[in-house]
Length: 50
Image (cartoon, rainbow, N blue to C red):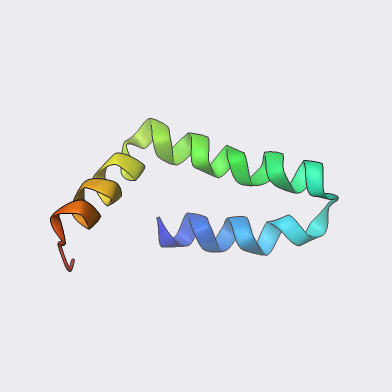
């Protein structure tokens, strides 16, 4: 999750706002397909420190 966030942030400055948003949304979509967002949200709600 952190690697994807870093790659997304490093890449968004390369283009205009619209392309940057689509680039970032690609990472969001991929992580959503993997279920990473659900897992991270559930851990946050439970208060897991891992």
